[in-house]
Image 1 (cartoon, helix red, strand yellow):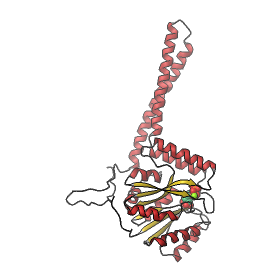
Image 2 (cartoon, rainbow, N blue to C red):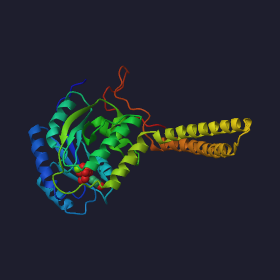
Image 3 (cartoon, rainbow, N blue to C red):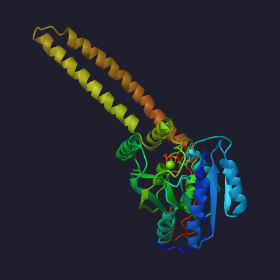
Image 4 (cartoon, rainbow, N blue to C red):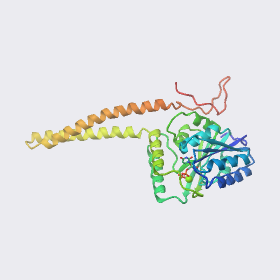
Length: 327
Ligand code: UDP
Ligand code: MG
């Protein structure tokens, strides 16, 4: 792996929504850690249309600290959108994405930067434990990550959130991906480059309440499943096969019963119902298959991402190649 020197600039992106209860403490702890790094830093707070005093507090923090920048969204667009907005404004060679509620301890950042210097492009926090979360949240998170890993075309590492450090080349790719339903950790997993976990203990939220109520969690989960995998269409194909096989079995038994001179009426009706249902399902699945392909096409992800090129007479040999876009 290519060793790196210190970054010219380290960006830290913090999406926040109604975080008046924690934001000052977060900034204090963040700057304490960043101060010890001895690296030029910028902290970008992406205010996701907060309706409490978050905007005022951020304004005050920005006036007192020249490293602070604030991006304010016009309304609440959701965590993934706010994070994307912050990433778009980040200028660092390395960019950290971190929650505002100190559940992701800033003290992990130096370790992430060390791995980045060793040549790792994405260092993602992997939770070894989670404090202060409800049983329901722990259970749903566990099921969600296992299921996702099981069916995703590009596996998303289990027990990771959005807390991570990314190299500039990865952030450029991420910002250039135009898709609407953004599931950032899946997108980062898809991009590639060298990715490594870094274990950390997830703390309890410092103050305030979770901004991820059940319906937002569900939405994120649906975004993840739909954007990551063809699993729903594959499931439909299996259902087609199953229904048509059952219809054939019913038809065969109706035939045998008729040959044996027994009442085959019920079996024939079952065969007919299953057969018609199965054929309907085939039609639907073909439409779904087209829809999935159209979705993939309009999503407009690059066909591939180049890490570097070598040996061409005048070509650059850096890793910062912009993603190639499909025609
Ligand atoms: N957040 C956001 N917009 C939202 C919801 C959440 O920017 O609509 C931010 C929030 O301020 C926090 C991060 O996303 O920095 C994670 O949210 P939270 O801690 O409430 O989620 P949890 O940790 O409970 O899953
Ligand atoms: Mg949280």
